[in-house]
Amino acid sequence: EVQLVESGGGLVQPGGSLRLSCVATGFTFSSYAMSWVRQAPGKGLEWVSVISGGGASTYYADAVKGRFTISRDNSKNTLFLQMNSLRAEDTAVYYCAKGRVAVGSTMSLDYWGQGTLVTVSS
Amino acid sequence: QSVLTQPPSASGTPGQRVTISCSGSSSNIGSNTVNWYQQLPGTAPKLLIHSNDQRPSGVPDRFSGSKSRTSASLAINGLQSEDEADYYCAAWDDRLNGGVFGGGTKLTVL
Image (cartoon, rainbow over all chains, first blue to last red; front, side, top):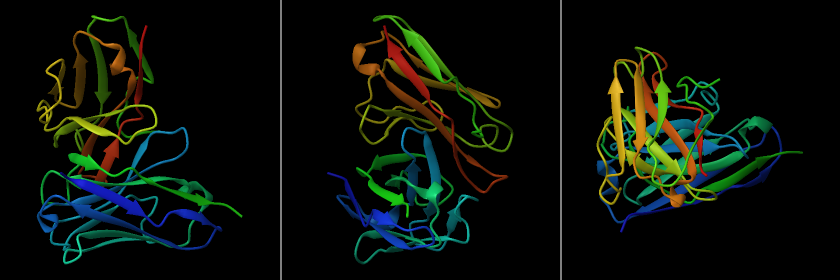
């Protein structure tokens, strides 16, 4: 059974940093792209970033480019999102999601975690 | 303002057929496949349709997807009360070099 479990969310002040983690089980982690998608309270889904199965390719939304870094440790079946220079508008539930394919340029996400809430506020 | 445009709301009565549209451009829907997600209240999104018209295992055949040039549609036949949810279309955008979602459509079963 595929499972994705996010952690690392919490309350952080504007300008601060957080590192989200997503531990994956139930599939060959290195064979699939992994994505982060966020949802602000009461709002729609917003794509954040994706990393290819091998980790060589990464893509970011303009809203987070230069501030967020996606990475993965295939030996530990774990996906990360390092978030720096956080802003109030980054407040959201952050979901990690498994791609159906290995390539990074995909929006076909077949399994999702339960999400972790990030709140940026002073 | 989302890159993909969906109607904010849709509704139908049990048993009816409902369609939800998703309009994009040549750089996203026009050149990449469309995916649809269902998000029930308080839960994570679920992949409903991938590759324009393919249903993942376990998704009822009441749900179907189609695509034509720069637009796509999700159809739900035999509407049921448990279909009440938010629905999102999504595609890769070659110009943005990133993923894009529609703004979402809230489906109400009357």
